[in-house]
Length: 234
Image (cartoon, rainbow, N blue to C red; front, side):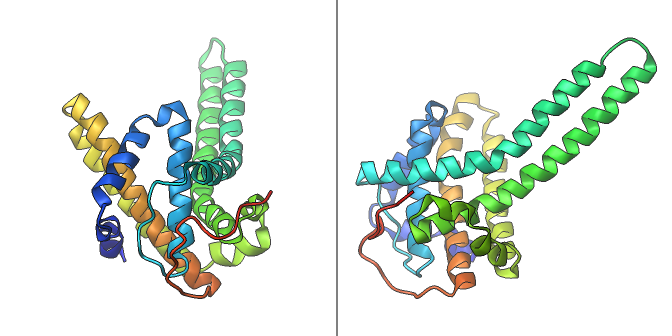
């Protein structure tokens, strides 16, 4: 599946155009709106691949793309709030406990260590849940679906999804290592790394999309409507 995912975008005749647009949006992701648009593209990838449609979507119908992306981005933000809040609380407790003396230093160190480990664990859990939550949104075209525990639990606890997530994580991690190597030349690492990252995250969501379709037993079909026939509802 990893090899198929890495060749996914290249099955399209205009894959270079897609990678250029996606890479540029990723490069300027700090402006938020480009990140939302990339998220919308990933929703399209999920919506297609969960039904066995391996034709890569295009960057078009920008208003629909932005709508999908905004909802997917919001879902990810909600799941990321708990680790973020925990990090803030830990920092506050460490600051409150700070003071002179070795005993105080031990307390601060212990609070920071425990809080950091909990934040790391919850962060990984959020990273594990988010692709499935966005996939459920993509399937049902409903923002609420991103938090539908009854739909998410059986998929999240399945070996199919766990294996797919691990493979997707490996792809993204590999891209991160490539970007790190390229950072020896700062400008090259930043620019090329953005394109590599977009390519990798798309490949990862290709894997997740197929796993979601398998775990949910969705009907397979080749769709011509790359943006999804249903309009999202709240």
